Image (cartoon, rainbow, N blue to C red; front, top):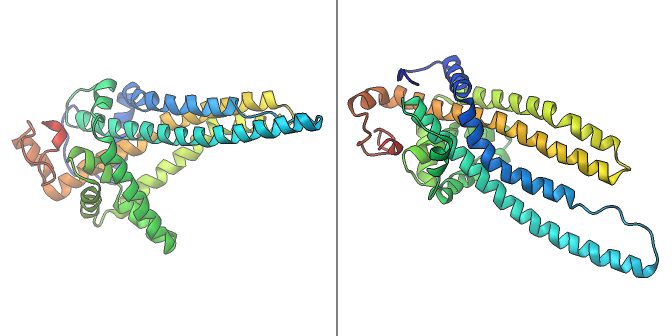
Length: 289
């Protein structure tokens, strides 16, 4: 924040500071998340518009042509699905990383822009992908032994992304770092996740459900189905760009709160605001240099 209010925070103060950062810099966080998500929106709408219409009953030669066309569409759908998956991951990584960098700058009294925050992700995509992959595997592994262990692991790994980016850590080191920082704090992480999912479902109901409902009513009209499903994708885009910054901002604020509580980060930053201390050892984050 502008006044560098680095001190241990209660859960309520973490949430309040999260909403305050988001509200005061709404355009910044909206832009960081919207620009990458526009790629996903374009791919999703293209897939929706290219869905084949129901085949018209015809003579055997026409049936053969329809069969070949269906085979081609299936192949196109597989390739399109792979492209969509790649676009999704790249966009998600840019949005996540750009938001973390923006929060770090704003939280420590610095200024930033949409372009500056996103540009910091160049060269970080592979590392951050590894972090999220290991995170997902760890949570899935815990969920195999019932849901509760998976939830607990997710709560303990909530700050692995800020740790990876702000301390320049590898995938395994960032997960271990998050586990150390969140010791005795899994409950607070759970509340952050719970509030996030409440916001997600509320946004999806508000922006997606009406269009999906009308798409169901137009089941006999392929052109209207495409129209309403395209609007459904737009609604999903709006819900994502509006709600997803909350979780990323909250995890970054939570990360700094844990470092203040456990490593006296506030005192270290006051003594060395230029960021020359080594990263990953309780010093000022790597990105401040």
